[in-house]
Image (tube, rainbow, N blue to C red):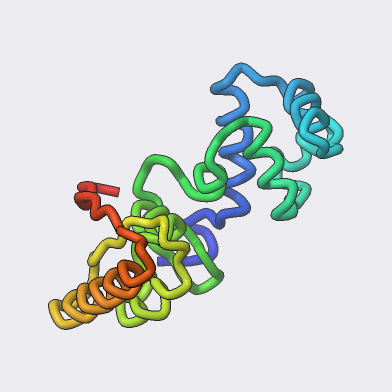
Length: 168
């Protein structure tokens, strides 16, 4: 598969999804600019047009401000919300959209061999998936989780285990 043309990068997805999300809410570019100004982020309509056309890059701060102004999850602007076209996460790294979304939410590492360090960096507010892990890795993860749970209980913190959701 040609990784230069076969998939969209998060930046390209953002350009398309910004327009889609805005129009789905019946928000004009001018309305979006007003919403951004209301939350303290200055951007003009020409900038919004250039972003949507792909002739202007977006900073992380701008992307989050746009997500706030539209009240959409930032993830839904950077990664496809439907379809099965691969996502170009890096010039030489593509993933299926569902896996890319689970990775971005903190549910699975891209490489199951990295699960321990991946989950050490997770916020603790994520549902962990064992997708792609061997039985041995799953058992190690379970033991790590139980060890952390016991340690938290020593400090009077209890963890509510929620059932794993099916799908992505």
